[in-house]
Image 1: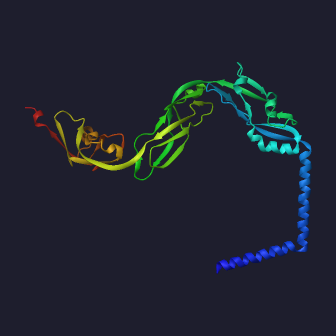
Image 2 (image 1 turned 90 degrees about the vertical axis):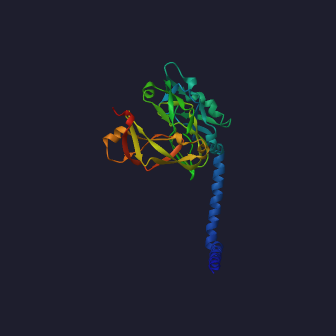
Length: 338
């Protein structure tokens, strides 16, 4: 029923539109629009054959500087070129300007004083290559670029991964992410180098990882500094995990000679998550639980916290059950004075 209603309304609007277009008054409007379109077309064709001037913004592409040199101040991203040619050609120059950037080699203009003025008239021939032979370049703005070169020192600096890493359910990191290389060479003025203890990658987020993942990351920029290399590779080891546990005795730490420590309970369950590839290589000897004798003497009569003194680096979410115990101190009879 609803589809029939929509169809009827559509048909009704269609008939109204046809009657509107066929009416005498509407025919006059359509005739006017037709002649207006024709007049516009003739104007466009005439203008396309007329010689005019227009300003075209060409992007500037700077060749990469060596790491030991930097530029003080911002570089001009565009130059404005006034071109004289037929109108139809001028339209084409605007459309294709981005595919014809002006390439500037800054190092070719560097001098011992460290300050150079690059006349853009020297690049008029290069700009003309993007134009037709009959086109004329009237002006280039700005007419020159003033460049200040700064020599930089260098130092090897440690690299830090700035990342948020999340794994899929039932998966875990099976080791620490590895950056390659782990250090980068930083080229910067001494005032900047002296403040750097490390540099970071650009912030990145990894979500729902279910396998070992590698990615190429850029180094977070620092004003006045350049890096070599400018990007690094990170490898994030990920694998499925399983839950495991051991029951371990508690040993006493810092016990005086002749003192024996008894805990209640005598054994503590250690539960943890471990990657499936490492599970077969684990043993109870890889863990150690302890109670500190000095803390015990300072807090007599209290439940003593159990310390995890040793654990493998590739296990996570370690839980002790219980995590406190009653303690009894016994003097070894063999060490009693006669």
